Length: 113
Length: 116
Image (cartoon, rainbow over all chains, first blue to last red; front, side, top):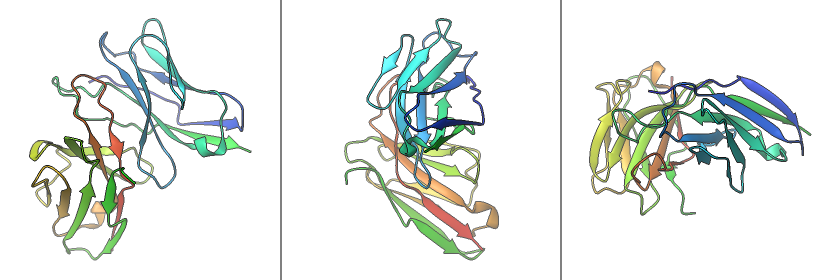
């Protein structure tokens, strides 16, 4: 299975952009990268996913490197509510099945007021 | 609220007792998943169902653990003869079961189990 690496923690100020990196050097050419986040005392929630080109939704943007060995989750204006653990999830494929999300420790994002 | 719900939210039990948790997925979702999360770690996959069929069980799911989804709707996770090491947050998720890599999982708030 593909693996991902993320920094343990990052810090940002409110209303500033945040760039959360993820290395996934073993990803294959047809694998999507998913991001989830977990707010304090809640279950994880889906943020965004992408394959090759950059992706945008109402929560965030995902910039994927041209060689697809890394990606960056971008929060354009961090708010206090964005303080969470952010997980870069390798492709949920194992033997062809797409059922299992493999969470690492993620990146703990602290947002300062 | 039409999201994934879990009951109870908190459970305190004594070692050796049996506990059962319930998960109600989003109504049109075919897949249902159970994960376990210990302090400071990300969630770990335990098992999943496609409708009523349990298709995969992690090696983390010892013989003391059993999960069911009898009618393809709600699911229960039972732990028999609980041990202190079972203390964790038990998370349920559901998804439509789309083919490929784009199937999004929606998580419930979890059941926090404390074994004394």
